[in-house]
Amino acid sequence: MDNKEISQAVISRLPRYFRYLGELKNEGIERISSQELSDIMKVTASQIRQDFNNFGGFGQQGYGYKVEYLYEEIGRILGLDKTHNLIIIGAGNLGQALANYMNFERRGFLFQGIFDNNPKLFGTRIRNMVVRPMEEMESFIKENKIDIAVLTIPKASALAVAERLVKCGIKGIWNFAHVDLNVPDKIQVENVHLSDSLMKLIYNVNSVDDEWE
Ligand code: NAI
Image (cartoon, rainbow, N blue to C red; front, side, top):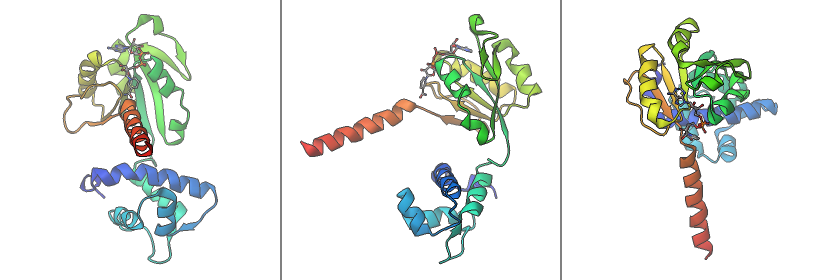
């Protein structure tokens, strides 16, 4: 199925379904109705059915969904049945934290290399990788079939680095730099701003405070 036909809103909900179903599977639960899934996930049952209908429905009406099947199918739709080779650009606090997070590998996201432009960091070992100079980035991407780059560098250099990444055929950029990258449409970019999530939390905390006053 061509996932381009599926709305981004549906796609953005799939990882959450996948996570919950993984937990249910680990608890040994074999079947679940859309109503039960709705209660656990705090999403309406009709939303769940609508979302799943985009992919053919997955379940037998009135009989519930097979948890393991659904988990595997959603994983397959998300591309988690394949491995992906990633590199990190920027071996500072954030780059190192991501490199050290082991759970990514369980999902098939394999960090193959980490790059920086600070000579003091070259050769430093971060888990199973050594920090390499930026001059080696292009050849490394080609030799190691890297599809995804993680940008954890300041915004001042992010645009130029993104341009280099595009030229060597990278398919996706997980962008933590606080700048919108100007890349061709065929390159997928996912911007992450932790502070957006924090601001939303603060807004909600303040709204609740206002209600109490
Ligand atoms: P950091 O200063 O610890 O690390 C940045 C690293 O990038 C340094 O090692 C530096 O040498 C390297 N670098 C700078 N220019 C480079 C270039 N042109 N090529 C290769 N490497 C280069 O900073 P930290 O805390 O790791 O944050 C990294 C960036 O991510 C910052 O710009 C920060 O604003 C941003 N950030 C974004 C977050 C988000 O939620 N999107 C959260 C935290 C940080």
